[in-house]
Length: 154
Picture (cartoon, rainbow, N blue to C red):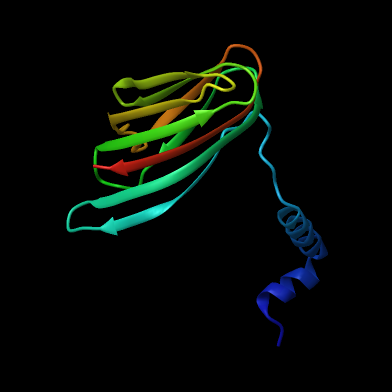
């Protein structure tokens, strides 16, 4: 007796081809566009009686961009506030970085090559996605923006 998945693939050979193509595409890797803000976070979630304590450390990178771009970070917690702290550098160009919560801009800094910048704020999280976002606005083309970011739900 044949398994249902194998039976479907033998009755419909195009399913096998589609599956193989999907596997090749997934295995080939996928890179973000140069202008995309790539955020990678790691940290801990401590489950309490009512809410979750969330503490995360993140890295952020944008390879090259010439217009405003942003990064949204969602926090999986029932809490309404977060303390956010970030440090940013850029290899080429000048970039204005602003940190936004539900009440608007909470902190802002301008970074240049050789002149890194820091943002730090206690902000109210957006109700819609329970998160916050960062905006990156270059004067002209900016290259090699890197940052470290940490946040803690409060």
